[in-house]
Image 1 (cartoon, rainbow, N blue to C red):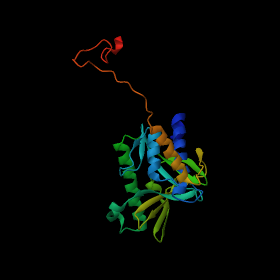
Image 2 (image 1 turned 90 degrees about the vertical axis):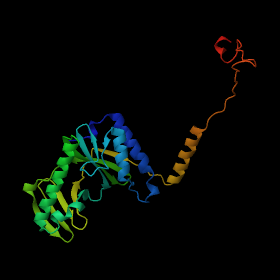
Image 3 (image 1 turned 120 degrees about the vertical axis):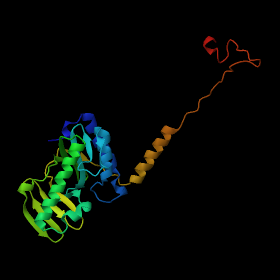
Image 4 (image 1 turned 90 degrees about the horizontal axis):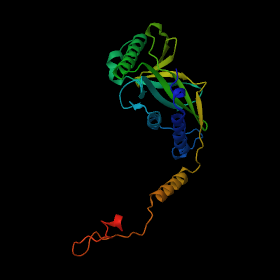
Length: 250
């Protein structure tokens, strides 16, 4: 299942254009050759270009919705192409699982995760959900998508309690629960992409911004024209034949 490849070419082109513009200014934030991208910017660009509903401020399992599709938006570094990324947080639910064994804790977390997905889909009339990820690498944004799935609780296995994390999988995905942060993470295997966006990073982004500002000022400058104002009527309140009111008859 893919959302991105089924969008119209103009929307995809605009999406890539805006990402390239934002990525080109990366030197404002970092000197790395890996372009910087703030996740809130991704949410705004995605919803603007694909005409999706922005749900990112809601405490639910997706960030956007278009038609009956829910989309979880993520941006992260490629690294080794199999990194764990945050998918849910359960701080408020800590009393429900905090004192349980590792196995029971994972079962409770999985139930909470599934309930949140079900609530999201029911409340927003979503029939299917997926992750849309921008994976950042050297001078490039890579587009990756995969289904956003509930945890198969009956098939949970290989539970490993290591220091601050509990690792487990359900036969479909690998997960890690960070105990101190009450955060559930999922491993994303990003070895292939549905699109790649080349990013040319400005060495001097301030210069680029100055040029942009100058162009904007040029556009805002208004040209002055010589103007002739015709009197509406004479000194005795008489409307003459060639006055402003009768200009059509001049």
